[in-house]
Image (cartoon, rainbow, N blue to C red; front, side, top):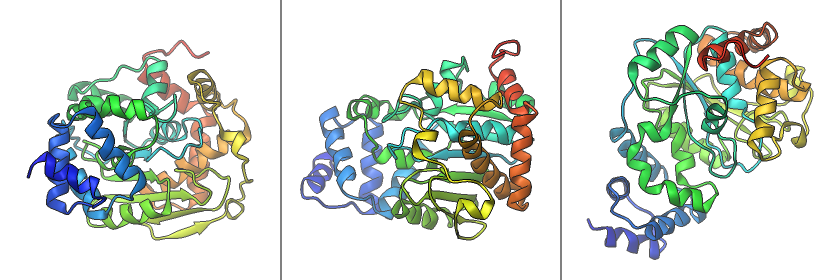
Amino acid sequence: MSKKYLLHKFYANQHLNSEEAEELMLLITQGSFSEMEIAIILMFYKTNSVTLNELSSFRKVLLERSLKFSIPFKAIDVCGTGGDEKDTFNISTLSALIIAACGYKVVKHGNYGVSCTSGSSNILEYFGYKFTNKTEILLDQLQETNICFLHAPLFHPALKHVAQVRRSMATKTIFNLLGPLVNPCTISHQFIGINSLEVMRSYDYLLEKTKLKYSLVHSIDGYDEISLTSPFKITGSLGEQLIHPSELRIPMVKPNEIRSSGSIESASKIFMDVLKDKATTSQKNAVLINSAFAIQLITHKCIEDCIQESKEAIESLKALNTFKQLTNKKHEYA
């Protein structure tokens, strides 16, 4: 089918069937659409919720066209859909480091922020982490530090055709939803923050048909992580729960207490404060609780033990030392 046919579907405000969705994503990755046409497609999905068939088909094509990274052991990815426009600091990236410091393998897939200035790749690059898609380097990092990062543009080069349009739009798009679904590594577990209950239902239906062990979390007031600013829902391989922070004996958090103020400098200060165990209680607790539920997914331990395990990784500075080793800056960040 032609790109003209597919574009007319969007002009007519019509969704795509599975075959059409696969063809659309294939044409996008081949550079067949102009930037204006890509913007039209992205705006359609900005105002119309993606269907499960479309999401599944888009994911299929992107995984097929990605560079693969295979590992001989189990590993977890900790990430969020992004696009919740809450401007929190880098909670999932810090959680990934804590999980690694606790001894579990982490392969985090991430990218530069689109609607914010401090996505996972922004903060890592700021501190000097060198992105690579070379298997031997990434495997060495996993063996030595229990963690490595897969910078999405290096593993999804076919998406270079949408990068500029996404930056220009500076808001969440369908690719925010696809990001957590297209980790090019053979991970066994995934802990995903979701920015809406509707998207959570689609993710749950899609992932339950895979071999992946997963947990999806959504804070009821709109965060794509456990923010502690409200009750949160968690669903996936371990069942479904609606949890209030008080049930975990953790105080509620105000939105401004976990905000990064929109700059990479602000985000980087909070990032290092958490690793040095100098962060505020609210900042530390937000990271601890996300780390703990991810560890529970891996281990099936009670959540209280998982919180304690995460806490120990921060307070002993294991997480900081993991980050120093990963960035080859063992004598910096004093």
